[in-house]
Length: 264
Image (cartoon, rainbow, N blue to C red; front, side):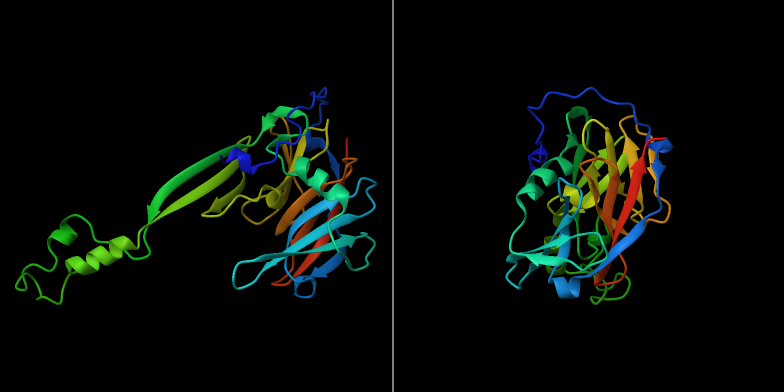
């Protein structure tokens, strides 16, 4: 069921011959801010980035929820030339196809380079609930160390126990690295990582702590992008020569960042 949450667009596509790309030895430029976006003006938080096939622009989707939890999406195009986002009526036809391989459970045409999904369930309580001898010594004998005001009544203990709830944490890992973690939420893979196009065998992801952008190859070699932080929605161009991502500046503003990538 969890795997069904991840898109597997290349399930029936013949595997391409892997090329040997070492992430640690890639030539990577410093991140460059190309445009600022203000979510106060864009009506919602970013939840999707997709490159156009010609690499000239990027599609941005934002979402917002009303008080009844109804979702509303807004659509924009970014030309990456310093100009602000251009609002459009709907997502371009190429955006869905791009997103399907960008956020899939394995690298394009490489089923062996796959993300592992773990699910853990535990009980959590909103209020500390006494256990064992603590309960046994409460509410019984008013002469046993301070009177009836000490301790917790059976009704209070029952009420506290009722506050216990099941917590489900879903973790995505690749080659030992944590790509994302969600607690009592539906996983949103594309927010935290993006595959490179075939046959590169690369992925870009935002580290769990600090949001630094990391590139990883199929052998688990990594390259952290110096100067990156608070990143989300990393996305490779179709040519595999650039990565775009959003870098949070403050509560409402993001910089759209671009790095160029080349083989050594």
